[in-house]
Amino acid sequence: MTTTQTLTALATAIASEEIKVVDLSGTLGPDTPLIKLPPEVAINTPQVEIHEISKYDDNGPFWSWNWLKLGEHSGTHFDAPIHWISGRDYADGSTDTIPPQNFIAPACVIDCSAEAQADSDYLLTADRVREWEADHGEIPARSWVLMRTDWYKRGHSEELFLNADENGSHAPGPATDCIQYLLEKDILGWGSEAVGTDAGQGFGLEPPLPAHHLMHEANKYGLASLCNLDQLPATGSVIITPPLKILNGTGSPIRVLALISAS
Figure 1 (cartoon, rainbow, N blue to C red):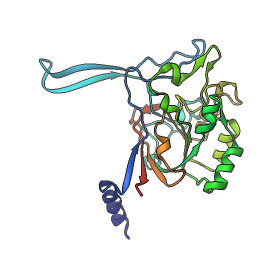
Figure 2 (figure 1 turned 45 degrees about the horizontal axis):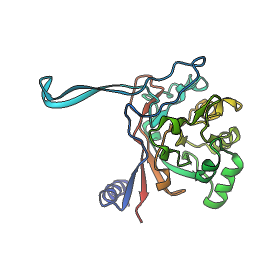
Figure 3 (figure 1 turned 60 degrees about the vertical axis):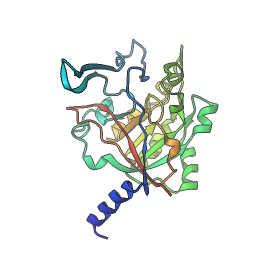
């Protein structure tokens, strides 16, 4: 089969629903939960705003459109390497300079939903990843590794989704040795269903927030606030992750799509 025939077969399989398209993104709106950092650390992203310009009225009789106010890292979003100080020097590290072939890649989904339900501060370790590989095969280079926790089922309740107390947010994420091990595999990126790619208590790890620090230091990518990972197989899916082509963008809200076999 030629490459052209392969592309035609792919399009036909999607149209016939032989290949299923799964939406891994949450709806972006004013009530979308956003990360909250301590005021002594940073200025927080304001809530998403949607402002009407016209809606088939005197301001535009035949059209409806809005203007938006939102942060690059709002809702389901892509983290580019320059988002973090450790990745700031990459010429191809912003959303407008990342090679576009990096936006389509296979995914490995590690199911940590039972552990996350039992412990909101659960950390996925390298040993746990090795156990997953014993069951599902070695994680291939240039793939996404996605941590399924079913956290998205907490919905748009900021209280439930951020799960914060006086010590900060409590949400599952990767241990430092997990990220180090995955980088040895030369993965393309790391994704989470929580509000960020790190655990809620990831500030206390070394280095602080290792998914951010180590992944972006290696010119790799992140996905956060993913949804519907429970609809994906452990292996065998392909995800499509193009962020908005923002000039010098550190990230972007994104609609992540997964392709899986319908059979």
